[in-house]
Length: 275
Image (cartoon, rainbow, N blue to C red; front, side):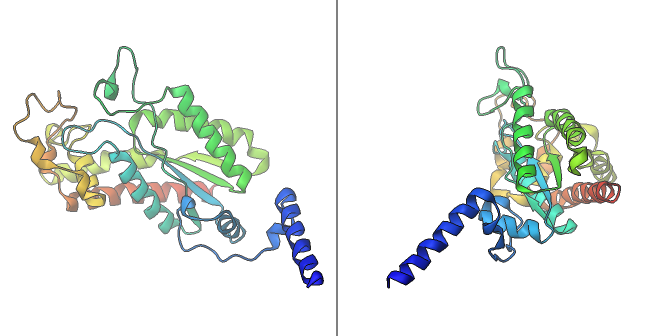
């Protein structure tokens, strides 16, 4: 029995040493996880995925903001989370980091943009920049070679592009690429589709309007309450939305999201091919 106990203690020592050095532990066999969601894995599953070529990771950014009287605050999180998982599935060997919920939303005092209505949680741009920088450095430390920022919120785009450019330059000799997938956020093709269906700039809107509402109905229908658009005490714009979201539907949302997902997937494939 003493011999068996000694053997077990020796094994524990090897594992502890391995955790400190990163060597012995890397020999442990763990199956590749059946999910692309990083937060749903153990660290050993992440290591196994990396060893099996899952070296690309998407960092989706959403937002907690007012979305008119008819949509939940985390609209962006639901939409970009769904899109990121779909893009990862199309690319293959790609994981998805947790959605970054806190993004720039305007000034605090006096409040501007979405900060003017209760529920919005915003960060100053330098803080958001530091947040992205820390996320990317963590993922690089883990062993990821390609880090992709995909944002569902307008004011996030320029900050993400700056961080991606700076880190790609810093890590060029290490063969690490950080990229901003800006094609995801372009809405020209979506507008064209809706205009072909008889919509106009006025009915489409730009915030919490026809596109946003339809997309959320497609991925998280319980987050949309169209009946609350009736009998408003003021104009829809005063309530934090635009366009005519009452014309939204889940079918439209699925078609609109497919445009975004395909555009982002094609851009990423071009980025990977041109490394």
